[in-house]
Amino acid sequence: MARRLKAKTTKKQKPHFGIPREIILLSGRDDVWPYAVVADEAGGGCGKVAMPGDAAVEDVQVAVFAALADLTRTLHGVEIDVRWSVLTSDSWVGQVRRDVGAADSGSCDGVPPV
Image (cartoon, rainbow, N blue to C red; front, side):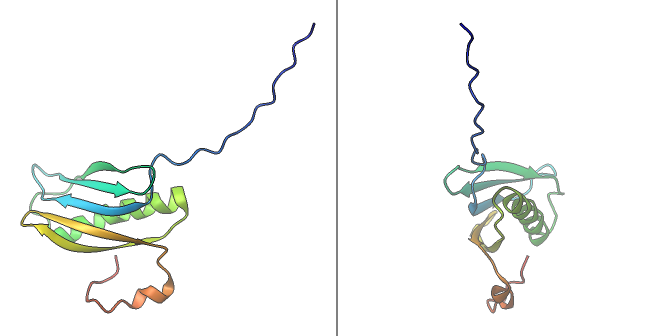
């Protein structure tokens, strides 16, 4: 008796990285700035930005956000924005908003869009 071959079904997998909700950035040491990301559904992650320990915090925040925004756009097709605030004397937290449109580009909170 001949065996019937099963048709392969392709199951669409969810990305292993969820949409970021919050970014926690720690001060730089030994030319790296560690950060953690809290994300929806699929969890989050952590990483490091290779920048001098005495780099401007704003420059490091831009570097962290740029990488996360690109990843979120690629995996989920969603545009995000972030608003940074001081968490402690050597750490910062970024609250992430999703689906940022052209109407939001004229923010009046004094923080330039990243």
